[in-house]
Structures are given as structure tokens and as C-alpha cells.
Amino acid sequence: MSAAPPRAPEGGTGRWLGTGRWSGLGWSLLPLGAIFAVAAAVALFGSRSPTRLDPVLAWTSPSLERPFGSGEGGVDLLALTAHAELRGMVLAVAVALFGFVVGTPLGAAAAFARGRFERGVARTCDLLQAFPTFLLALVVLSAVRAPTRWHLGIVFALTAWAPFARLALAQSRVLRAAAFIDASIALGQSPVRVFWYHVLPNLLGVVKVQLGSTAASLIVSEAALAFVGFGPHDGVSLGNVLDQGVASMLRAPHVLAVGALSVFVTSASMLVAARAQKR
Image (cartoon, rainbow, N blue to C red):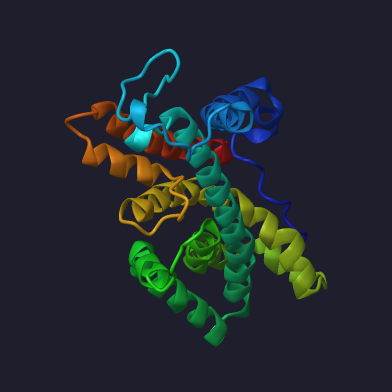
């Protein structure tokens, strides 16, 4: 019996190397890259601070000088949303990568260990995914006097690994019954070598799709926590823009529009970028 080769990427080798794949990959990453580049340019090279107030310009409409207009206290909405998007994207990507790095090998190892370890990881994932992360964050952050993004990141990381572990666990259950895994073991390869060279590479194509949806949900969660008053204490958050927009809905509707569109565009760009992982 000979070991079967690892599963080829969907679409075949020719498509993998062809221009069509890289063209699709580029288009999928373009919205996220454009938002990050614009936000970084405004945050790094802009002349206005996201916390500087100019009461004379409070709630003023968009203009050439201030393309997004002004919010409460005359804060420049362009500077505020750019800094908030940049910090929110860095937080979301960092937590999603942490969940990917921790959850994927944990779920795969549990599937191959079987027994109590497998059942324990599966039940823990079920429990964490059944309990809303937003409620857990409210409970934990209510005990913090001045929440920062470090606190948010720790709270999100407590549950971010569970979806990756659940996917890896389910996929590994299929792989452990595959003929090429049995053949590798029959040929005398050690469990560690089989796990490292045959299991993990065949998991990544499935599990990494979860990166985009996890990051997108973190963008929304961070904004929601800031909206209800549990965001970063410096007020630089898309949820803070939404809060200002709701408070001034009739007097300055552009503030609510800027906040809502920023959350939607940033979250949607994360989901579109996840499509690149499917190719």
C-alpha cells in the first residue's frame, strides 16, 4: 500500500498558479487593503488629532476642509474614524490570528487523541460558542475601571479560539479515517510526523476561512461595546462615533451615517478578504 499524496488545492495546480487565481486574490483583498491604507495615511500623516475638540465647529456638516464633518465638541470625524478603524482592524486581526494559532492545533490534536481529551475540547467549544461573547465581555469589562484595547483583546481572545478548534476537530475526524493517514502510520511514520506533515497542511485550507468572519465579528463587537460605554477610555472607537450619531440624529445626521458606514465597510471588507482563502 502506498501513501496517497496530499489533497490538491481546489481548482487544480494549473489554476493555482494561473493568473486567474492571483487576480481573484487581489480583488478580494483590495477593499481591506484600501481601507487600511487610507486609515493609516490619515492617522500617520494627518494634521488633526482624533481627540482634539473645537467647540466652535461642533456638529458642522462635511466640507472641503473636513470631508466627514465634525462631531460632538467639534472633533474631526475623518481623523476620529481613521484612527478608530486602524486600531480596530489591528485588534481584530491580532485576536483572529491568536485564535487560529491556538485553536487549530488544539482541535486537530484532540481529534487524534480521542477519548476524554476529544470530548473535553468538543464540550468546551460548544459551551463557549453557545454563550454570547458580547455578554461575557460586558461582565468582564464591568469590573475594569478604565477599559483599554488590551482588555478588549484579552476578553475576545478567551473565546476566539473556539470556532477554529471546532472546525479543526470536525475536519480532523474525517482525516483520521483517510487512507493516506492509515498508510503513513503503516509505513512506520511517528504520530507527530503524521500530524505535522499530513494532518495540519490539509486542515489549513478549511480553517483559515474562519479568519475573515472572526475578524469581522470582532470589528462589530468592539464598536458595540464602545457604544454601550465599555470601549477604550480614550473614546477613539467606531462605537463612539455611532453613539454621537444617535445622540444628534436630527441635528447632525451625517455623524450617524459616518459611524454606521464605517462599521459596515470595515466589517464587510474583512468578509470579502476571507473569500480569498477559499480559492
